[in-house]
Length: 384
Image (cartoon, rainbow, N blue to C red; front, side, top):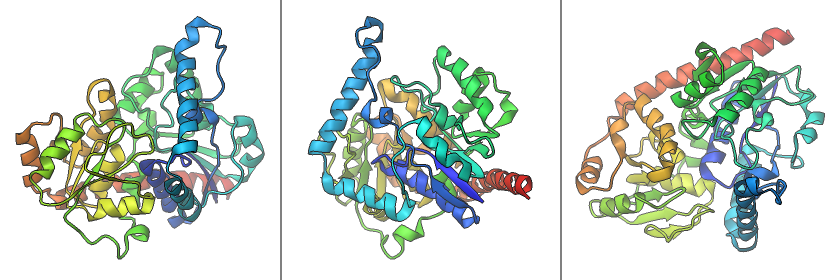
């Protein structure tokens, strides 16, 4: 059986790469020949083409495109080239990405006939962008893919509410899929608002929850040390204060791996690790402080003591992903909503009951495996 995976495998983002790696690895371990369809549209990171820039009503869309173009150019000219090369090396060695970059839906058509199953997910591939809206490709509405079983595995909307005009489009796109799951409970609400019967979809965990403990990267390299691993994404607001309070309670260095989109001064000692070194730093730390979903998820998977820091202000809607995960594993009390000393002291000093959390993780994994096994069985029954 051959499966094609469509996700944000191309992003120089630690979480994006590890969720992609984890899903492919699980399928391969099940005997499926899984590979990434190298779809990398320009709009995702480079902005894409301007849309009638003379129209005043489209100023916000075109301003976003302009900003993304400028940011992409800045990263190419002044970004950390060694770090980028390490991401490229990870894609080649661990994701086995190959073939030319496919920038449009039309470019996908010639390769679709090779797949018995297509899987879209995980990550925020269903998050409507201001420059593109919802992309039909990430709903597997692809010409030439008619014979493949089409499965959505834990894609995220990246938000708890979708604009009404997008709901109409979403309702049409969902009809392309044979099996539907989302990563957050809020995603079920969005699907229902788009007209999908709630019982037709399931909540499934991020692929990093599926994968286990990433022995391929960590074997012999995860001996605990006394560091605090602080991974901030999108903003340093609140997490900077929480990390500062934590470092006053923990006797160890504060290490801060940088995002390639970081626009703030380092929180502690900054560095630019590649994906494997990043995971090893997290796995060694005596405490993880993160406002990133995957920073939190991988702390749970690897049983590292952690403080999940809520994203504040206008980004608060993005906290649904982390809240859902923490609720599922019985660790909702690990989230810091404010930077008060009493909360941080409690989170640093209170040990995590990993036995109970791992038992819950095992149940979640079993449900996810049953969902994916059912999709594999459906393909085998159809092709036998």
